Length: 211
Image (cartoon, rainbow, N blue to C red):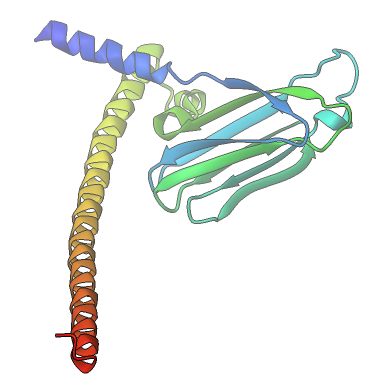
């Protein structure tokens, strides 16, 4: 029992340290979007910056970003233009995929900028250093609090995924039902058209006294 508990604690600690900044290359006049599935009422924070190709000099205008963060319903939570770095933070009002899109202005010749993006949600988005200062707790208590919040987050995530699965199953049932009735209607229309054609041909040949 102790070994299982220890393994679970180690696993949670691994999850807490799993979030690492994302680094990607972006060409001029191109846009790259990154999606994150976020639950409603979850805190999310993001930080981004462009790596300067020439250290010691100002970042050229060709490497400055346009950044837009939107929800699956089209609501804009962050929008910046012609910036070399920035950050955003908000609490998700609805569940779904949130999209962070990065773009560079058109430039000739084409340039490539390296962008570093760190996006955290839920437990990972919490400012633990601030929690430690306010609560005046030691390192061990802070780690235990992190693990407790991680366990609660995983528990909520399991319920969230189960609800999403139920929604998908309900959608599949409705789709199958609609496809059944559509197939039935298509078959009825085909049989009706075939019957009308048969009646029309029979009437035509009777008028011509061929049958």
